[in-house]
Image (cartoon, rainbow, N blue to C red; front, side, top):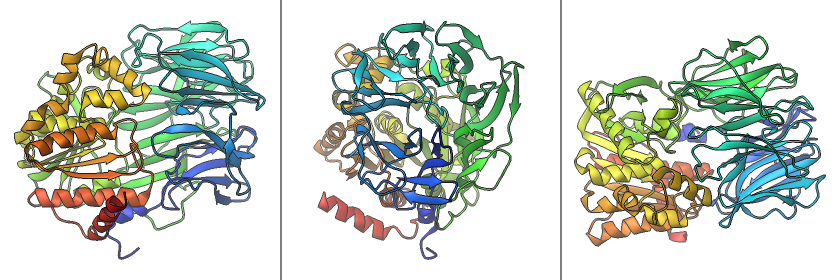
Length: 622
């Protein structure tokens, strides 16, 4: 690939996900890789060193796991990219068609899977209800729980142990659910249930605060599950006895949020993940001694970690300068490497603090291009809203730096990792606060002499796309150009078409549905400000997106066209994101071409034209 430009080689350098291993045969692992050109699952036998591709799904597969005995590979099959489907299983050792994992399980959106020794439990959401199902010894599923309000299995939302015992106790006798029967999906409570009788064993609630379950002790008969609470203002770990209801807090003198990741095999210690100012650290917490010891890991983001049966800790680490690597704590030699050319180096992420109009300190990162400022500047807005920008490997962001942008990322109010109050400040007041923080960050960069105020791009995806379109209409004079990927563009129409869990999130954020609080939806809806949009605009959208559905995007584009404006629009055939590398490269080329054409001083990088031609061919075929 020597003739391929550096920006594209960063995309095409193959990546590996964090491996999941079989509980009863931990040398049989499942890992996702991009070696084939899209994320697909591979079976990795550590004893022989053999790595074999298992899936060839058109949409791609990012996550999977082995069966407990290592004889099969399990994944959630989504045939369109809409994120709906069902769980399937295929042989670990041989090419064969996948079969349904749980006969009788309804198709829908996945809300968690737990594979035990005798029992397998799955949670599913549909347009009608949220339900939890149990299968005994591989038989047909029976209904364990059903409710109109959201429910999901504990352990599916953080980095619970690699063997996926998050919500199910080691002896299969207890399952823990995260329940939101009051409709507040921002602050779930916990409920432990006997899967044999469906009887509730214990409940844990913190009114107005989040509770989350992360993983049961690996010791049979031990009813302790590692959880997090927010009673101190930050996410903190504790142990909950799911039979008695007793809670034991873990005292830690650490800044930032702390989550339990996994247990040591004898149940004596927890692996903890600390997130502080956009970077991760790992700790071993010896429970009886009450002592947390920092582990030796590389700087940056840790996107997964777990404790092996021999006590070794594996993790997946990356930062702005290099792609993700699979490492053991204390060892810089990768455990497994994907086959293919290495990526060109990235650039360092610089931590950055500034003050917003409310007098609050806001954190973010900047990545500088070559040369001296003031630079053309991209305000790049993260999704979520309850996510954050971290020091991470990001080929698309690095391509913008290559083109000449100073890229600035703001962890606005609502972002994870800065305390419960910071995250929840958006509730009932979405859109405007995030935009206020982004503008304050831009003003700070201008005052420092880093940003040229006449050459500013606003760009974001998903919730970041929502903030981009809101900023486009409410502050049209601040932007030279705009890029909104898979955005919320018409909030009322988006609510009507989106997945059930997203509707529940919107009700929690707004305080109700569009029928309940129509004035607030109208005020915070980008389409209400569309007539003020003046900067060149590029929109990218997935045709099968169930998070930010396509109809509401076309509503927004239609309103622009009614007044004679013509945004550039690119649609692709899967959902909220593509797992196909060609598609990711194609979208980046479209964005780079738009930026170079609309921002003075931005270089048009080499190698764009073939991808632009391919994009036209794809659009014509669609």
